[in-house]
Length: 146
Ligand SMILES: [Zn+2]
Image (cartoon, rainbow, N blue to C red):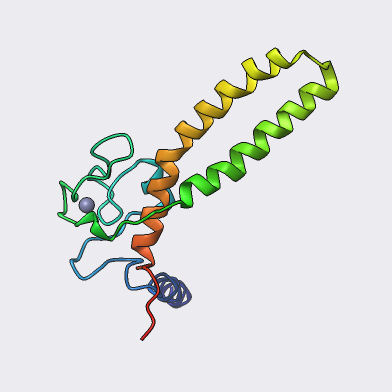
């Protein structure tokens, strides 16, 4: 019983290394994972409110807890990740198809251009959400020189 209580205390200590990992000053208990919250495109603080007002346009704030999304600044991060991941997948598939079947160029164009478009647009929104959630949890912001 005592060992279980000590184990729970150690887990709690690990969880609270960052001020926003368990709760923030507002008392909201953080969602279980910033990645899951990001995949659902929900508010990084409460995990319930919508993050987006459009396809990639952020809402002004959370409609559930009132968190202002002004801190959110994913910049080119999602685009860079998508370029690396989608590029590796599509180039790998294209090479495999070329080596196995040697199809004419038009087959490659018909296969890979739509796949590039679908994968890139499909991953953009969740990756942006994940980056914003992680940014919120770790209180990341632009560096400053004092
Ligand atoms: Zn919220």
